[in-house]
Image 1: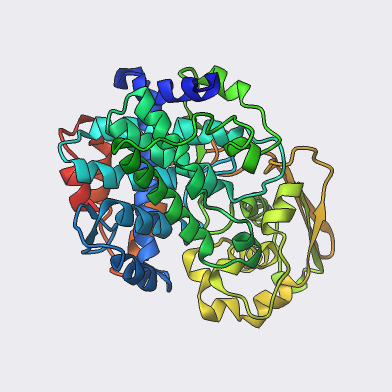
Image 2 (image 1 turned 90 degrees about the horizontal axis):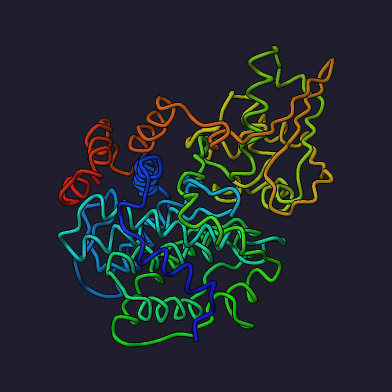
Length: 448
């Protein structure tokens, strides 16, 4: 028998009418579809992308879905894998801060691949699938009350991928529950990949997207997983998030939409570095700071920031490690005023002036009792005097949102940074803007 929590979540995802999604949630979905597609196209330029694409092409033949930014089509699960990898590998994809999960990445990757495979899917139906998939993933992720034991962007994110696909296939409750249970054997997301700072984090996001499609395929064929897939004694929460409280998320279903709680990442580095970048930019705007005269930079950080981006500086920095290395990111910001995709190329990573300044960055853990808190973060820059600022709302979050101009500038920069650069954002932006009214997704696929 399916427990009440599992039943409530699946009824919401599978049975709620498309019209139940309010205009604000649909607008937010369009905003983050554009952001994620642009970031995913930029991911084609990552050094590991050709190898990943080559490997995935060996897993089976087919042309159901497109690889973003490439003249390549693959079976749906393989395309979802590559697209989720591309969207996360630059650490530039949107995040749900309360869940500490980049849930839109696997959710959109799976939903768009599935919509292509199905054919005849309207733009509004695709958007709704993404919205409901995010409700499933982020409700589960935000239930966590303890330290992150597994890589939550992938572990919670696979539920978003599955929820979107199951909705697109119009599963009934029994079929949907059977597929959700089959996700348990596919849980991706060791934190060891995060500790070591390699590209395996993005590979895990690929596994999350593909898992949603594989579970749906099996459920449609009649396979059934455990009924208590979420709350059972060996269910998802017991395995990955033993300290949790699901009740607030369940109470919010249909009242608060998780897509409206997503945050942009204006900088291609770990989300926990963003308050520091923002704080340093505020100080730079207010005061003349000579990076060569800085004696010490002190960063007062919550425990989550210490764990996720408080890694030590190394002589052999790689792009993936450096994106999650706060001393390097802080030093880059002080020297150049911001952090861009170009700041993680080989010459920048070996720049002796940046590394010397990064060596003067000190990380200090504060007494924040919330193991999932991103802010507040306090930045102190000591030269002849000490400059200080506290950042309480992360830049790009709903409480401190990016302007439309900033969002579009980010998307344009992503397309320009792709392996095959594009100078015109308008085809993609127009296709996404019209998605809610589109009779099909053909224009979006052409733009991608």
